[in-house]
Figure (cartoon, rainbow, N blue to C red):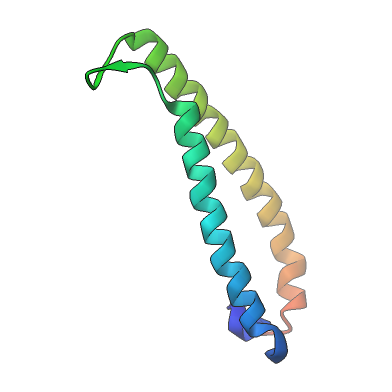
Length: 88
């Protein structure tokens, strides 16, 4: 879609932005992993209650962000279809 919807002179730039977005996603995944980390000793979790609370809070936050992003993208899909001028 990037190559179909971009102007010919900026296709390379848009592909670069696409790959940059992938690297940013990997960085964000690392940040989320840091938030979800819990204390371990020898690979064993020391406090199961803290671990459960940490994971539940982390993934609940991810779920709410995903739901919000989904709603925003759904609402943006209507004007985006018009801007695509029939490109499939």
